[in-house]
Length: 182
Ligand code: CTP
Ligand code: MG
Image (cartoon, rainbow, N blue to C red; front, side, top):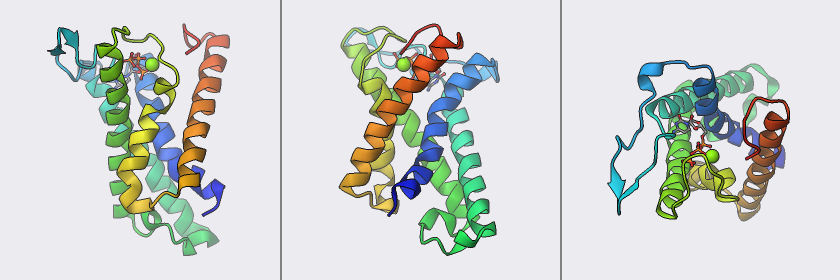
């Protein structure tokens, strides 16, 4: 598989990872803005913390589904319809791929938060390179039964995620969109 196809398959995951930040910034669906861990703790430390919300989960699933369906439509309209990529073979498969991608991205991101909380790193404080890659690790592991990622693809997407997230955070900080550079 070509590297551009690898990136195309990962776009729903990149978008899913961005959705919680966008919906939080725009203050959409405030009712869903409550912590997934409900305030519960492990060893007197919050499991996830206040920054992992139901709004983040719902928006990530919706965002990944929208992108997957657009990709499916694109592949069925253009000549590339012969694509052997499984997710593009039907709209139901595109929605399935989008849904599990959204859940996997948020679960991976949440696993990163569990580790940070147990290490006494406060919500929103940086933990590089886990912050930039946790969602990608679970996305790759959880979609492997569909995509059968090669070793090269795994390394490529992890490095890409690390660089892309670092660059976009620094850019957003420089433009005044984000308050922190991580
Ligand atoms: N967010 C959310 N729900 C999620 C994930 C993220 O609402 N499940 C929103 C929160 O507003 C969060 C922001 O997206 O502050 C940025 O997410 P992220 O960087 O992943 O979280 P942190 O604030 O760094 O928190 P943590 O230390 O737990 O990683
Ligand atoms: Mg973070």
